[in-house]
Length: 263
Image 1: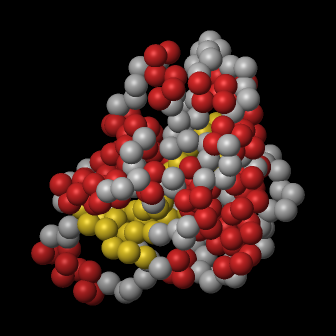
Image 2 (image 1 turned 120 degrees about the vertical axis):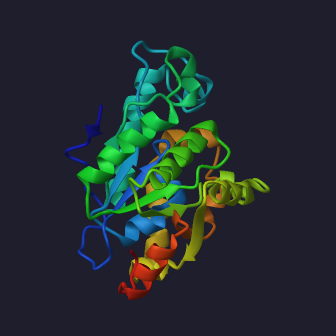
């Protein structure tokens, strides 16, 4: 089930129009998009963030991360975290969509989702927001992130997407070799990644964008409580990659005749 947030708060949000494209950004959890590509979101007002693991167990349960975040149970946690997510995304000029998959800490209370189930759900949202540029995480280290990354790659392999832009999963990208392993997975799937400049999405003041991202991160109060501080990696520069299938000879020939641009 999809949960739109129809009346996201707008205080302090980036709302002015710009020529940057609108994005549909895939987020494993209720914070990952802002942590990993909050600057990109702030550059592209009017974008949508689709969070995969935003569901709650049918009955309230206690999980270690929720307790560390200051919550009594999973119901309190998910509802509060959705409010935080709506607030953080509004500061970036974006709006949230929440899918009902349960994250790994709740796995014992429901079946772990299949990669194809996630891929099907994402394909539905990409079709719904046709014309928005798809942006997906690489899917690094954490089991939920790995599932989402695999689902996004599946959409390329099955030609339900022609290409997407990838962002590096904040915090996990700092673990040695995990990004290298992600490139190896792309190669195994006969996919390729090309580095992109942030300026390809538009030009905004780096100082302003950085300030917006920091405010948005602070909106995830419960998660910063659990971390104990703002993780240093989220202050590092964001990096984006264009991910697509290796083209056939016919596709290469067609590409030489196509106009240049993001897509």
